Amino acid sequence: MRVTKDFLRGRGRNGLTQAEKDVLEGAVERIEHLPARRIVTRRGEPVTNSTLLLDGVMCRYMDARDGFRQLVALQLTGDFVDLHGYPLRRLDHDVGTLTEARVAIIPHARIDKILIDHPHLARLLWRSTLLDAALHREWIFRIGRLDAAGRLAHFLLETYHRLRAVGAADGNAFDFALTQQDLGEALGLTSVHVNRMLRRLREGGMAEFARGVVRITDHDRLARLGEFDPDYLYLETGTWNRDD
Image 1 (cartoon, one colour):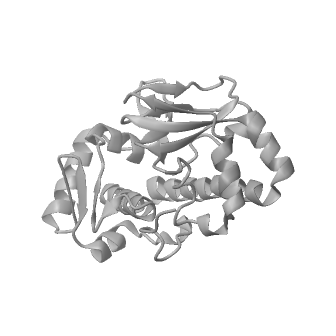
Image 2: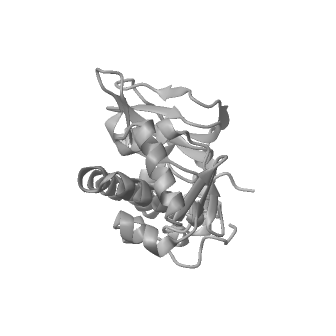
């Protein structure tokens, strides 16, 4: 099975020709297995590779002087974690794993060749960074304009739809081995507040989060609470169960 099979899956992968899929597969230099809670790239370090997440959950984050960590992006299966590092050559934030992860390493020298020899594939790589940018804008809206319950509702639905696109959601449920502290760092809340909001969603019959599994029990009400509209994810309907 191809290691790059989930890249843009459900979000534009249909635009890749078979030849382009072969080129992307051939650009992978190696596969690495990473433990949970490991710093992968530190802010300001030079980067010479880009990382495609094959399994697991990774994040980009920034640490405040008071020690509070703010997650600025959550990376899931099929995501390029740091493709923006290709033109920038360094990152302005840290990158780390939240769970055990399996990643494909693509040297920037091979991306250079893709840009020269395969301009359409290069545009699709660019598309993946634009999808990241759309997520960032929605994260700003979520933290800046929604209350605590709305932030959590929006975040859970975003994660559900992203995982569904790559076939990692089973019906209305998905595995999500994050802690309440992780959720707080993604939402700008304390873990105590997250706990209260999880209870509110559970008691309201909208969502449950227990033993590393999230279950969406009332999608429509949860979406209204979180002012969630998946348009910014640029999802293709009916593609999340197709194998490559």
